[in-house]
Image 1 (cartoon, rainbow, N blue to C red):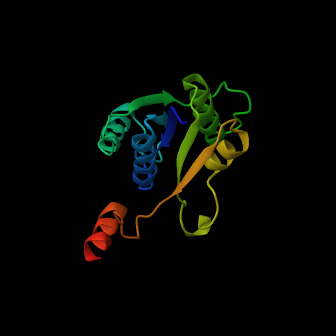
Image 2 (cartoon, rainbow, N blue to C red):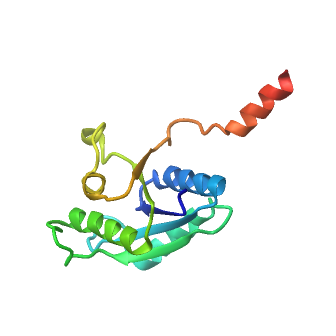
Length: 159
């Protein structure tokens, strides 16, 4: 049974699907979800603690039971952190170890057209170095969200 799931989130639109998936699994089996944002110290995207807190508060609304929320600075002193993305990935893995997480959930998203069909550097590093299962959740922002329960109830009512 999955008692503790760690969801790594950033400022991409794919976080919604990953967090929703983890919350759905936790609701079904009674597990706990922890949302983790690793603070990067570069100016390419809003990475301050206030923006991260707002992101986590928004994403926590997807859960019936509020998840734990962590904001952790990227660890540069971690062995093997040869780049910022390596540091982010290894920080995710270190937090998963500290929490005794049994599953890491992370959203799949591309960084533009050139990266379509490829995995990001952080995700690759997490997949290669994780000692626990990692579930990659695809982003479905262009597809309509189908509520399976509504479809099932509609089919049952039709019969």
